[in-house]
Image (cartoon, rainbow, N blue to C red; front, top):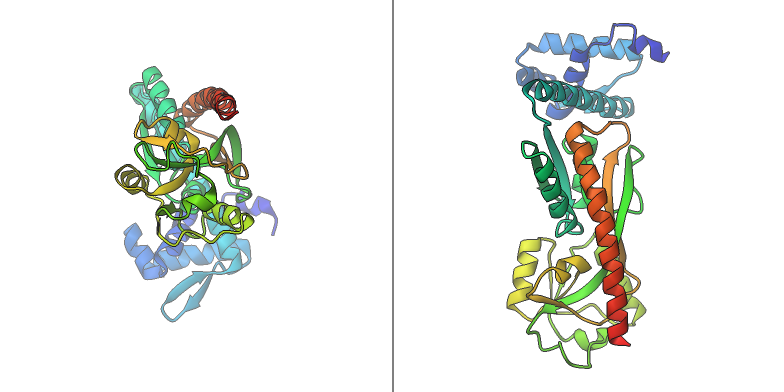
Length: 321
């Protein structure tokens, strides 16, 4: 099938909407209900698309339909096209009303403490009528929302591998450090090696996260078991409350602790764990005006934090001799 057949006028926007609805709902009946049309209309439109492509997009099963390998590829692109059209329509509407628009950003731990809040503050000072929506989630969840067009960009730790439709931009490096509350008994003593700290309770990231794997590698390299007394958590609110109210130890991005008067960084080295913090954006979707404005401020704040990280690291090196 030549790609020109998709551009000769036979493929309609309604075909893309119908195919996406069928994939979301799992049956032709529910897809029709969600779009407030009849099932025969959905069936006919699906047949038109499949005939145009020359391949089946869905496999019919007793309880509904599931995408074929061709369906998965086509549905992903259809959703991307629909997301672009929604963005275009929204930008036109906001330009007509004199507003810049809305930017929706996803974040997870690294970058959420200083980088993103500072960038948002700068953005709002420049564009007070712009709306910023921040959504938290695990890195894999945020990637899926970004691909689906539900997020404009994400801010946080950069992944070694991302889907081919996404691209990353590093803004600064942020070391991972061990942290405990300001009054913790470990502060001021000389016994701060990893082996000395195992006796305390710990907070670990949940399994299947990059930081968890890196911490496990550090303990393995030192020939140590994981702390027996530990909580596994990625909620920053829960994590911080436990840190300031109990004797737990946690591994956190450095800037989270530096900016918190109730927390102190331990001198215990974790030199093998450093985080590249930055933004992730879709390759095939140009940023909206609002997203582009936020990116400018993120880059500016990233440069400031990179300088702050260098100064802090140098100062700490001199202090520890």
